[in-house]
Amino acid sequence: MDQIDSEGGIAALISRFGVGKRASIAVTHNGTGYFAVTPQAPYDADLSTHEQTVQLLAKAEARLREIGSGKDKLLFVAIILADMADYAAMNEVWDGWVADIEPPARACFNAQLASPALKVEMIMVCAAPEGQG
View (cartoon, rainbow, N blue to C red):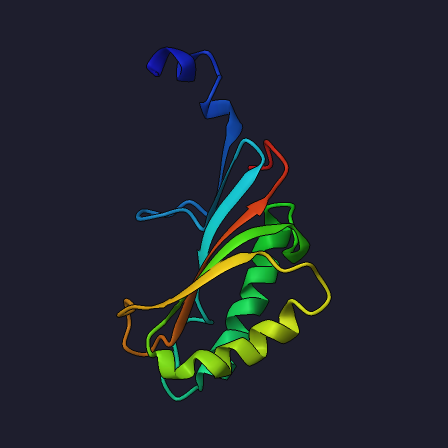
């Protein structure tokens, strides 16, 4: 594997965006983009799941543009809700957001999120141009 990377093979196909100490904001590899997205930080527990989803999808659109993609190029989205009772509220926003495209495959599940103020988080996989980093 090191030999491939030293020759510019696999490593040359990976682009990282917003690289931080713990994680990158997004990564693309071989024509596919990967990222997680949350509502606007600092997270506001007083916002409803509907409002947090609006914020989150606005951030997602910006991130998709940053990596040279768009919501019409989404392949898969994993939606994580802190409380499944908020499923309908999130879906109301989601359905409006994907109304003008052929929607991606998706899954929705419940999990304890990293902050008690977070009500929704999404993991997105999309088609993206190669070498955009």
